[in-house]
Length: 479
Image (cartoon, rainbow, N blue to C red):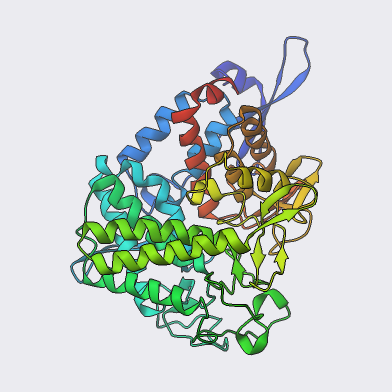
């Protein structure tokens, strides 16, 4: 950092949250020196503040050599708490927390669970933070009981969503009703990890059990062993990925034990409804659920959960693993049970790349290893290489764009120091001087990006830095 005399002699230009100070170096040449000003809201304007999170930010920043990465971490890690906690407090004698996704004022089951997940290790040291996450779990239970097929919910159900005209069983409480297997998996994952950290079963009351029963029922319905089931969806739209063919039921499948997910985590329609990353996630989530159910003496439901997990896992191994001419045995992204498969990956999580992060698939598993090589190659139609680096994008955004979520997932699942460093360097090059993550960015011009306020990606970047701090502190110290 500049001392006061150097700063007063310099010319300062502010752009995108950074201050650039031009000073003379030893050779008399002008150099740009970045001055990193916090992009967080003023303390009085923050939606929620946690003392342990603030202490953690200071502690980790002090061990990071790279000032820019430290600045991004300081901005990003608390972003969910700073900006997205729309409601927090007691409702009907239960903690209740509503978490918006960022620049869209609705609560996604997936996003809200992922947004608060990185704070779980700290809740033993902050009772208010613990209550906040209890509130997220309670709110998610409430949402599932309203409609297990919905992916996103309104804060104020008196104001109908602009998607209320969708041709599906819409309700005033719903922001959107796209059926995505991963939404319910994230609900289970958050409950399980809360229980794992705290040992507290008080949240797993009658409503919670009813929600879990409904999740299992919904998964069973969407195995489609007895017809298409109750869910269908159509939208009047110019985008074919925003609606379903087949009178709203999607493309046909052969019932083989896998669960149909009519939309991907990107909220884009699947082509073949058996979305493999989400089915693998479901195997892990159902295993988690069975442990909790055993603990609270819901033995029958625990057995049902375990059996469903085993059935899905067997079907994954039989129908989702296939030989690829260039990479050997790999996971397909989507299948239909008839033998048709799509080989690709989408940046949104769960993705095939993120499997070791989101499920019990081991990073050293041979099928995953082969799959990873495929995903990070030009054989993956959504793998992008450009001026500033490489990464995985999505049909959801423009071609030639990479998602920060995929860059973070790559680093989170890597055991290669050089690969992790490359991911961090790409993040530095691609935040467009904003100090935050985005949905997607142009790999040749990162100043072109989508979603300037995307809290899931922000908090997940913080999760990556904390993981490195705990497991590879030497990387943060030498970068």
